[in-house]
Amino acid sequence: MNHCFELLLQDSTHQLQEGRAISFVGRDASGRFGIQAGHEPFLTCLEPGLARFRNDGGVWQYIAQPGAVLRFHQQRLQLITTQFVVSEDRAALLSLLESDWQQAAHTRQLARRNQVQIEQALARKLWQMNRGGEAL
Amino acid sequence: MNQQDDFRRSVQRDTEREQNGERERAGLVGLFMYGGVVGLLLAIPMVAGAYLGRWLDSLSPEFGTRWTVSLIILGVVAGIFNVVWYIRERL
Image 1: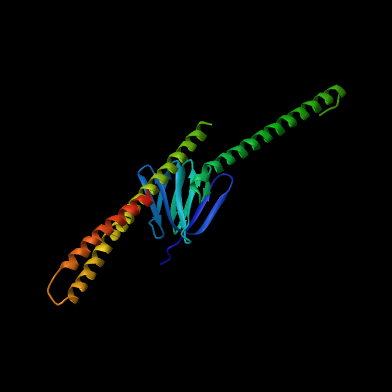
Image 2 (image 1 turned 90 degrees about the vertical axis):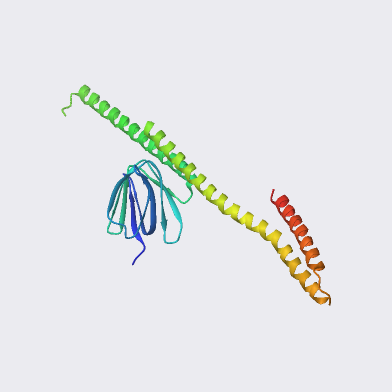
């Protein structure tokens, strides 16, 4: 019997696939639980915080997530959330999150600036058209 | 922002929990290892002394346990010295 299962982590911007996961440990409202290959179909909501999984190399990887839907079906575990970061080093997760948030804030700021520039350019064009008596 | 703070706190809390759990497990294993080494340091000179003493006693024609008892006592003293030395090194 195959002792590995497929793990798929998805958020709104990216996804991560681990083809040979051995076990997964997470926490839902009922407490901490573990999943291994051959588990019966399972659906739950993970509590915010850390979850972890181990691949067949024996390395534990930690997942920071703000709450997620977890589904295990046919040797495939799907974790769907709004944001996640993964690292072998637990201590690095927070700094990874911070850099993600900074990146997102930077992107938002750029988008806002672009939007303002487009609005200004549009207003200028309309004003010029209005002065020149041009038709739209 | 509030969601980010909640998320950050959850990650911090779980990280600390994991670290504390690992430390406790390491502490238990460490305690067994430490106890085992101390026991061996104490027992080995005693047992060695007892065997050596018995062999020396068997060499003399008359029946006696002088060497056995003496070397057991010497083994106990050596074991205690060993343990004291080991504990001092570890502290």
